[in-house]
Image 1: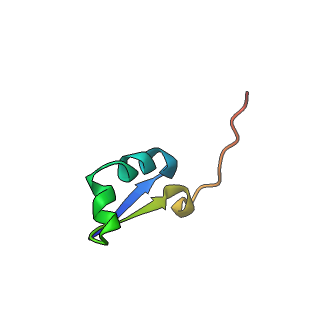
Image 2: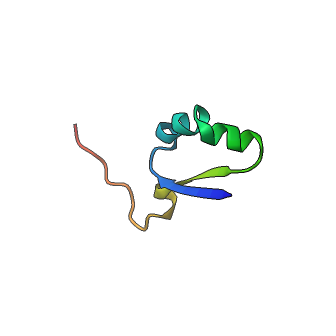
Image 3: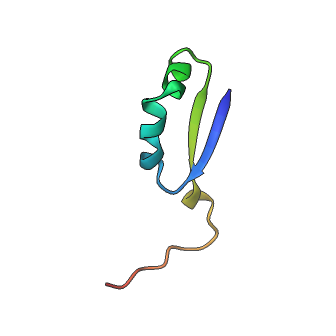
Length: 51
């Protein structure tokens, strides 16, 4: 099973998939988690944030 997750912060969801039942499924090649970084698909340029 392939699970695609669209996110801006792939590091935040990494923990949920490395310490759970999903981890065991990945180890047995029953599931594959693929984080898709949303900013790669954005049509707008980043807007600088003033301090």
